[in-house]
Amino acid sequence: MGPSIIARNYAETLLELAHRHGDAGTVEAFGRALDVVVELLRREPRVREFLETPRVETAAKQRALRTSFQGRVPDVFLRFLLVVVEKRRQALLPQIAREYQALVDVSLNRVRADVALARPADPELQREIVRSAACWCASATACSTARCATASRACAGGCSPRACPPPPRRASSER
Image 1 (cartoon, rainbow, N blue to C red):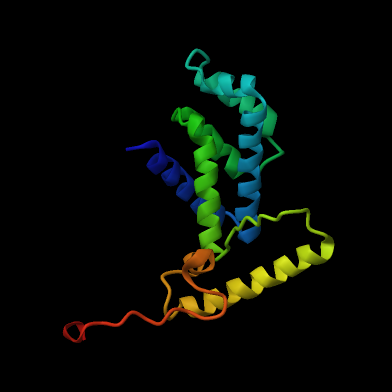
Image 2 (image 1 turned 45 degrees about the vertical axis):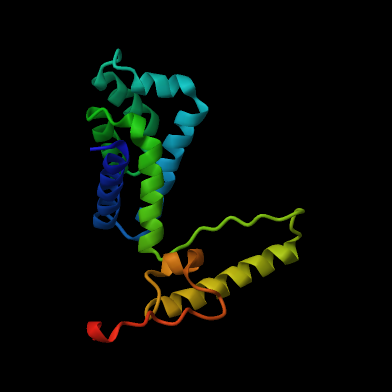
């Protein structure tokens, strides 16, 4: 099994835990906690090296994580993190975070977009971009049920904000 498949499996497990132990707020809290851990690993190479080196015993890594995160992240999330370390998958945490966020986005029918501008946007332009994106995504979501593969794909470019493509024509032998 490749690292991306393993990361996806861990992300699916974390999302299931979040749903089982809470609501949408818990799902978002787990995502924020995972982002904090990944950002710490990115910002602090010594922490990352400590967690990833095989020279440090797993129990010592788990003690350090408990000390650092107990009371700061949800308990179920902390137990998940301890299992990731126990299974020696801590190097996959950035991939797990990306996969988790992608799963959350799909489950909430949320689309992320980057907007490139030639100059900084003033507050009015920022509001207009948000309004346009909301309208476009709502339009794409509405048309996606009948004609597009998924709402997230539709918003990402499968549908035009003004009109959906016509449904594919089936050959008479397919009817």
